[in-house]
Image: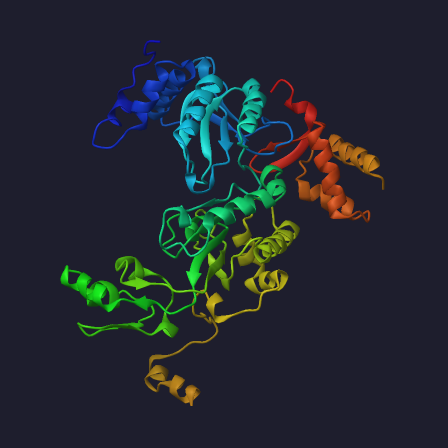
Length: 402
Length: 74
């Protein structure tokens, strides 16, 4: 198939040192009319500064409420190959591990049923198969199912849970992120495939506070591996790092948010009771510092980028939970919060927004959680208490502390 | 209420509201809960209607339950 459209604007995106999606689309366009028309439509969108896509609607696979995002071009006459250009989300394997055979399976599958364009992976974590027509959806779902794959989540449902590579490849993982993600995916199949919430709900699990999956910023429920024991210190290795040019005072001690590390040039000491478990020091001095058991996870709730109030990081609700199969404690917690959200949530209201609207106190009550100091999100700002400068000069808190 | 009777009632609710009001699954549950039915029972009835293709999930800025016939020819 020859090139159908001139794409001077898209061609600009092929320049420079980085891989370009335009180059890959052109490769697909050489053998797929759908991909060629997608390229042409995209060029027109860039030129006109208008998106010509409609999304949503009634398209899907029988029995499923998600996994397919209907997309239709408003310029079907001009670009007939993309009149229908539905996106299919496929539940990815935990940690995104594939054999080359599996990758070939997906490439062949999508050459046959779709545009040949894929996105490994979407920001939720799913395998994204871009561009197919309505009549291909049922056979596609059947072939996926026969090969051990299932559709992912979309719409007002639990989205496909995702995780970091965890203990499979990372020495710092303190929980089995892969098993937790797989287990929760199996447990909540109904909530994944049958949209029943006010809006989406994302669960992301990471093995340690480095948070390679950015769960704290992107997930409604973040499950982050953590530790309770003291940080083990290998003083010789710390000195090695210092000899190799790491400025322990500047890069480690001064960056500690708990101010719990001291370094005299020869010996590093940590006051573990003041440690905030951010893991900065451990990540900067691999091998020299190590977390020690007991291991578990901290649960956080309510992250979301475009809240009405702006981007919001998640909020600690359980400072430490043991994470052992069959994970009943967290499953019960999730069900409790869903029940409350389902009952009171408005359409398109995320659980974090509902917590802001109705209060953390009510959320903790329905979840059966006792308030703890770790849940304090920020120091209280009391609008009805005004200090004057002269008041502060008297240091009234000293009187209070007495 | 028997399950088949409930399924008919749910279908009728969706049918009569077509073009006027879109129901989410939880809206349907809340509607029939007032008649003394358990959430799980209503959920199961919806599930069977969806699996049979009588009702479908749609997405218009949120997920809703609508009549299955709409999907034909989509």
